[in-house]
Image 1 (cartoon, one colour):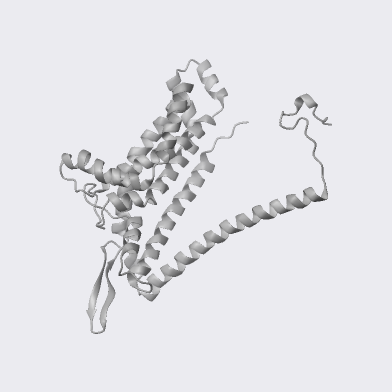
Image 2 (cartoon, helix red, strand yellow):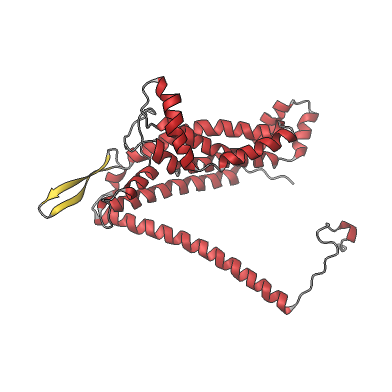
Length: 327
């Protein structure tokens, strides 16, 4: 039979505290619970509303405009034009394959991940396993400042510095290109990967490190062969979250990538992403409701939602599949 804990066994936060159960206290507790439930319902309702709008408008694009899913997902070009009719100008589709926008998104995301994954992981490992306290106290705020830089600033940085001073002198690069936008998005994702990966590394019990040191392992051996494998689920989740963040980035690609939706593997050419197309089309004065370009916005947005949602689900699977539990 378990005995009640002594006062010395209680944490400091519970010592000298008296809890009284009164009708007024129960009323306030129920009020707080109701408020929390209402906030949760607002979040759920907002999500359902967004999904409903995307599906309904996408339905209009595919069925009311007579565009089949086979044509939408088949290789081709993404372009809209106008046909001169007797009663005025009417919007028609010329080609409507999502692949040029999807390939532009993936090109920029690929460059961003090549930059962000190694630098973010190395930063996390250094801060968690190697950095002294004073150095860590300096570097952590710097990473937080980097995470707080507005994306529009990074977009202009890519347009005014990375492209003209770093890439164009190499030859073959256009002023707007996928590489400069990818580098800027990679810089944007470094703090995200570093922070999440460091949290995963810090969650590894010290007992594992001490046991590895006791067997004669060096700090590098312990980090590479013990700590990183033990935190691999969190590290992979950080990578996937950064990938989803790069796929959904808007301002950087709208400013630095260009507005030319082409299906190519050349990183030196302009590229238009799905988010960049949405921004450009909404800024166009000729786009009005119930037209094909207007409906295409929601079809592209729904495709982007499915892509990022799939990445999130895959990240959840990886986290649960490879998560280590320590008792």
